Image (cartoon, rainbow, N blue to C red; front, side, top):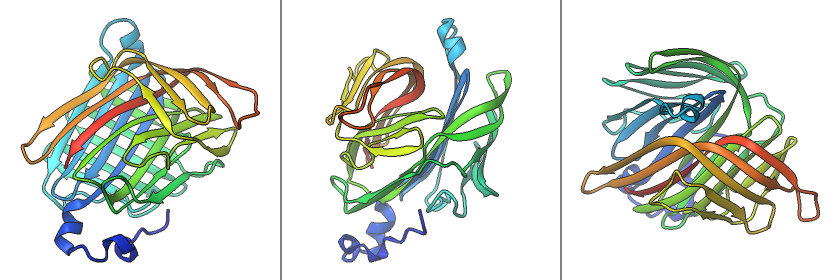
Length: 309
């Protein structure tokens, strides 16, 4: 994504500067899988405050019934404290607070990710020179005038993690990146699913952005997908999910192994967030007449998110 400047977007021309400042939502998210660990982290600026989070999940420990969440950290900051890159290869995203620091800095051919908190430390380098195309979607979301998101295919990564008294080297890992910026509705909700491997991955969203960011990566190709349907029980998010697309190209069952959740109520603002980690099984197709490709134990996440912001 080149430098993103919303000033020329017609729907924003009549909005006052204070409105654009308070309603501009930006985030830079990284999901990293280095078996048996899954790590999720983000730097977020919602206009009137900034925040960052990181968590580490041990799938092997979860399977043994020992509890998979090794660490879950978050920290808030005043408006303007977060720097969010307008594109993955831009000036980098960062937030430093008393609770720790999160940095995502471009390096030659990649992105260097560092989290330094008391409970979790991470150093990783993500390669950006992959051959598969990235997804870029720009449009008018439900309840807001403009939004853009850039999603990556599976990217090679390596580094190390320290959390929950464990120190692990992350070799032959894969990462996905979500860099998003826009002006969303006062109340915004979405369901999301993402999983990546070297030859197969997908990104799905049901909610404020419709089907604009639904895509399948298959053998280096980027294939648009239809509207996504998420069938699950919001009261039991760790029960299996059924996820399908309207074009019949994707039909999966997601089996959660654990995950991260957070509920916050700040009176003027509130959020409900749950991000299970688990495995996808089912089939995908390159097009309607193509043979089904089996998906077996593909590691990824789903998400149920509702915000009043």
